[in-house]
Length: 199
Figure 1 (cartoon, rainbow, N blue to C red):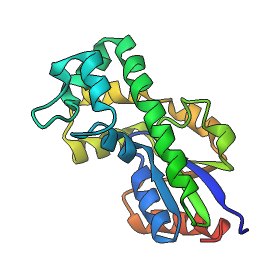
Figure 2 (spheres, rainbow, N blue to C red):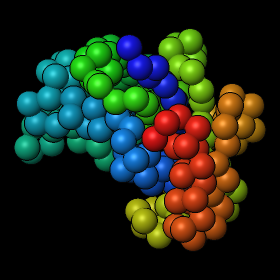
Figure 3 (cartoon, helix red, strand yellow):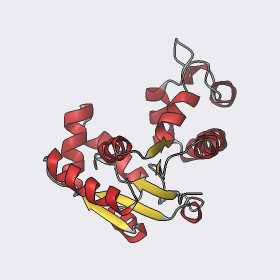
């Protein structure tokens, strides 16, 4: 049996984590995207929607039957217990789908793209290495403003929900410093990383 490397990939909002995941996938890694799984669970007809409607009520289901993300985002920011309730619904569903995807993969390297990898202690024992995509907070804010059009207050609230930059760096086995706007530089960093794991 060939060795399968299990990498955890994380980074704060606007760090470039998704770009790194796409580049690794292009090199032959299998990317298991926790955010994509979460979105599928909360789409119309998704496996989480019945429990979300029963727990939070109709204001949190949009006209199509999917999660009303704007209402939920605001609710979670103002009601800390709601975040735990939502995670209690989503996390078991996401974990089951991740196990299924990992078990069905034949790739030489599995990349677990997990935004809250540092915050959740259950992840580290399942991984060979933790890869953190890093940049300054100023760069994070600029990128998210350009990409999402959010105001500074919204970006700051999201960043405060995530682990701090120092916490991510402390958890890292490998750091990709992605502070510029040069895609070629990031591609070079990922190429070096991929080479370490047979990609």
